Image 1 (cartoon, helix red, strand yellow):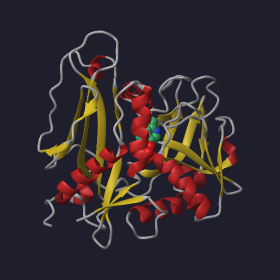
Image 2: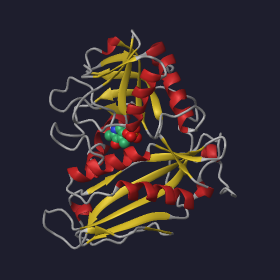
Image 3: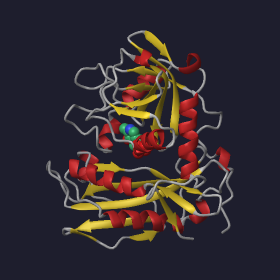
Length: 342
Ligand SMILES: *Cc1c(COP(=O)(O)O)cnc(C)c1O
């Protein structure tokens, strides 16, 4: 397989058209069989629910080349389940899990020349999405849906080393207490652009959201979940109904327990008690883990490991273990890797 000619280390995280996408249509109460095509445009009615009323959700996962040449998808069944949680939250047609998995498999296989080689640090980002569309003006769920998956190669996240980020809390909320925070739906992200921009203008990497009801507990970072490592080596991550359940986070919890014998707690994390943590990180598919150097809250700057200047040892070993599993270098728990037969 001749790979495309790209500087894998330099490609960054940006859209790039690849050879094929997967696309399936739902009409008259049923999905068609889905197929690959070479397009990257969709034509939908101007009144479509996805455009006006936010009836849209998405997923994100990665494929990587293993040392032995296999191409591995990380926990795609979890993304299939989460997409359907999002679909149910917005009264959308669900995507059969088998169709989701087959679509991911087929689109990666059709784009093998775009899958970065082993050792490049780059990976193939997979973006499934589901939208409601059709002739409409009223406020009601769509009768037609498109489920599509496109892929693009993305570069290594930490080109300049495993460097900590600096966060500030925000007065804005990304989701309401009984809202859609736990679903990966488009509207949550439109609502996060402004607080993100304000944080960046104030000199931070990003903002961290507090629980929308009391603004006293940490929720998440808006694209990634929070975790902290206590002085007693406990992996702690917030429990809240308005957090998007990160597959990376649940995988790290498993690794902390099973590989490192750590205690793991999912519970409210007070923004006033950051002193309990020696290390902190943000986790999600794109970066796996981003070390958190500091959090600024109400004018008070709290620094984590090494005065916020480098990643701590526990964060680093969790990162190395999970990324090794994703590359097939150490044994994965049963069912974590889907091999794209080549
Ligand atoms: C996708 C996402 C995450 C990370 O989830 P992963 O499954 O680990 O990629 C975290 N927070 C939000 C708000 C997200 O949309």
